[in-house]
Length: 240
Image (cartoon, rainbow, N blue to C red; front, side, top):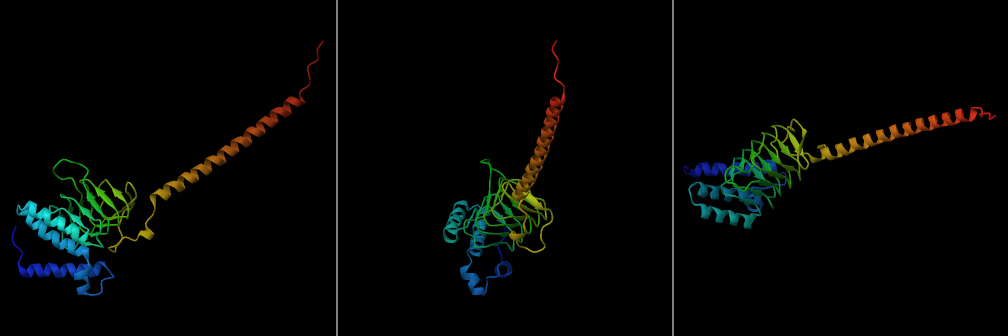
């Protein structure tokens, strides 16, 4: 791995600062972002830890990632690969596993977990392609792939790969929008609720069954009334 030149490093730092201003409307000044954004600090520390990891300094890299967690509340394994212009908003509780891969221009909110589902070595954590947004508290598990520009709603649990330009929500996550929004954030207030949709369908089905049952009971009552009327009108048998 080649050493990064000072000019290249300065360019990356400036790029990260611009990303923070673009992603977070609360950012007011460069000094504020430099001093008060733990998600940004976590990424910077991770880059150093990752450089140590790929050079074979595994213990030092793990120790630095441990310090990173203590300082920022963000746990990133030094083996994880994170692209450019990524942003971790707030950051507290974010966990990124060893074989996770995050593409350029991704956005992770607080409490996001990119975890594994196997104790075997090898690829066991998710891959996020470019422009993926993962909402607060969402959990993405296993060696699955989140397609380019996809969105994961807050609190969702994703265990299957997600198509590009789609939005998934729920536990387990289901696709609710096949084409993602053009902007780079999740508009949770406009996301459909698949669970509510299923409950509404069940309610309509129950109401339909009730109407059918009522009609059957009415028909049965009419039939029984007709039978009783016919029986009452029949002459009594004459005994000799």
